[in-house]
Amino acid sequence: MGIIHKSQLKSPWLLHYDGSSCNGCDIEVLACLTPLYDVERFGIINTGNPKHADILLITGSVNHRNARVIKNLYDQMAEPKIVVAVGTCASTGGVFHNCYNVLGGIDQVIPVDVYVPGCAARPEAIIDGVVMGLQKLKEKTEEVAG
Ligand code: SF4
Picture 1 (tube, protein in one colour):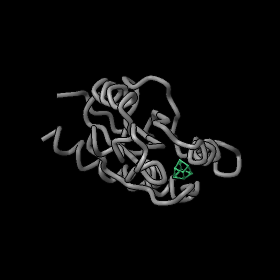
Picture 2: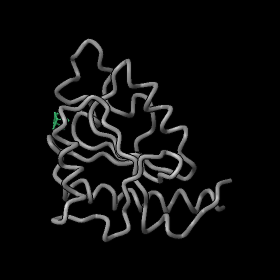
Picture 3: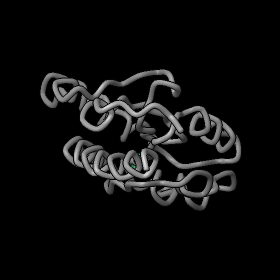
Picture 4: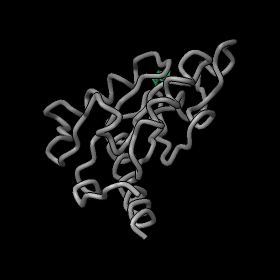
């Protein structure tokens, strides 16, 4: 059983990974950090360390090369944790779904808790997806705590 901290429920730390996107969704994720949206005012921190992250935010599709990386990042995160697939590519493979090296959406390799629609996903939708993820994180926290 992991150590549960109350702050996880309101101030999640995110790890953003770009699968094989066109970078459109990545720009929108970055927009969330700009003064216009400023998600840090809610205590949402973008960390580079999977061991510090509560939420794995993934843009782009899964391919044969990055499937192992995505699984590895996910496995390094402590429970409870959630995965948010940002944009059509992360959800289904999107415009890349017929490429010879593409496996599809993120759920081909790890469980996904929230799917954020859009090509590209708008910052408002990404923030909304993270907020939905917080509710799921709360449910998982309660499960782990028993
Ligand atoms: S969903 Fe659209 S904008 Fe986002 S990575 Fe895929 S092609 Fe690019």
